[in-house]
Image 1 (cartoon, rainbow, N blue to C red):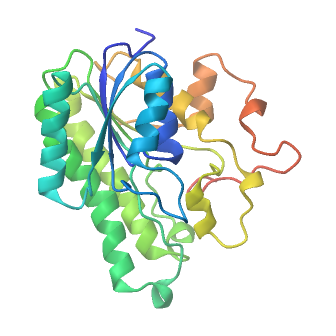
Image 2 (cartoon, one colour):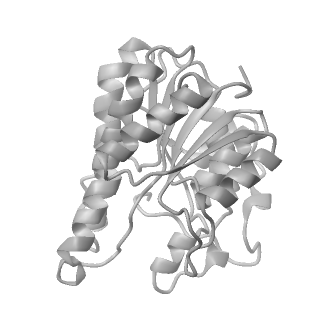
Length: 272
């Protein structure tokens, strides 16, 4: 199956950036998309809300359900999943995209910021999977796709920002566990990570990084689509990289994804 027509996707953090790119690619197939994100009113620092995302998804040919949802809050996640099932009859795909980032060392990381990252990234991924799984287990070709890096214990990735790396690798380890438990039940549980920086508003959190040094979020939208249209049976526990996924799908010219073709692409974190 090469399309997501009629499929229902529950995407966290889909009001902007990579989450929205995944939603828009699925929308072009006519998919149903639950936008589970915190942004319900415009933020001067971060463009995009669940409502602007819903309008874009509908314009692209999809069916959108905007849901204000803080994935740190169990009751909000349960309510959002229930609303999705009520609107669309089930859930076929969970995309764990929501993530908090703070790239500082230990002495420059307030515990409030540390806690936020652990709650959103690792715990949020676990919670969303726990609540969606009863529906995924009933779906025809269920997928859980989490945006997390290949797990690494190399200190070079930990030393500069232990708090963020712990939270992000936490998503990777949750993926390993879910794949081990639910892969044998024919739920495709995998992770996807970009080869290069992806130019989203989150990059503004990283000092010295120019948005021109990255690729557009659409590359992750297209790579995710290639993953989510694969047969779920026997496909789990993989840590996939966007350009490798696209190459396997026959897409090798990635020049169109560059934000500024004149600037060098910077590798993303956690990849050598």
